[in-house]
Amino acid sequence: MKIIMLGAPGAGKGTQAKKIAEKYQIPHISTGDIFRANIKDGTELGKKAKTYMDQGLLVPDELVCDLVVDRVKQDDCRNGYILDGFPRTIPQAESLDAALGQMGESLDFAINVDVPDEHIVNRMSGRRACVGCGATYHTVYAPTKKEGVCDVCGAELILRDDDKPETVQKRLSVYHDQTQPLIDYYRGKGILKDVDGTKDMDVVFQAITDILGA
Ligand code: ADP
Ligand code: ADP
Ligand code: ZN
Image (tube, rainbow, N blue to C red; front, side, top):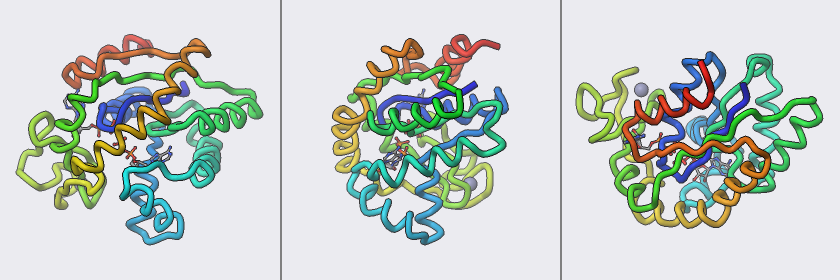
């Protein structure tokens, strides 16, 4: 099963993608996580990506597309995968389609996690990320057992720089300009499925599994 997740920053794509990956036993591929790992490791890609991410801008397509296309060709992706945070522009979607087409494959579902802008700032200001393992929490909606400490690995939690309100506004406008058009792109291909992302996490997950099937 090949799935992509669409939705505004903070809509809950990562939260749901992790649960889907676990249930269906497919890799969860998050371009944001890949960039953050590269930044942490100090790679050239990380240095380039950071200058865009810090400003709430998208990393240029040419730094993203090959990376994802190479990743989905790896062995662990033969039974499918879930892409979280890619594609984010029409050229990215076209390049993915072209690469899949060459392999005789195509996407099965584009899940659009729909959350209006007015909920987003609230979601993002409460989001906390683990500096150790990258796990995501929310101060109100998904708190850790012990405040400020990751349940999984015990490392410290931070508010991502790009989750500060000024950057969130920029990311939202970038989303509307560059990523939202993908909704119609995939609707046109007949694989778009909308879910109401304002509901509780478990309710959203149930709606997604209803779409994907047992
Ligand atoms: P969120 O989950 O809040 O939407 P991500 O972790 O997916 O954020 O992405 C963080 C940042 O990484 C984005 O704001 C963007 O700068 C960069 N990024 C991630 N994926 C892509 C992509 N497919 N194309 C361009 N930039 C990307
Ligand atoms: P995205 O990957 O789309 O940027 P995340 O999955 O990181 O979004 O979720 C953003 C924040 O909102 C996180 O702090 C997460 O714990 C929280 N969150 C995710 N889904 C829900 C939900 N259905 N209700 C309330 N909070 C949520
Ligand atoms: Zn952790």
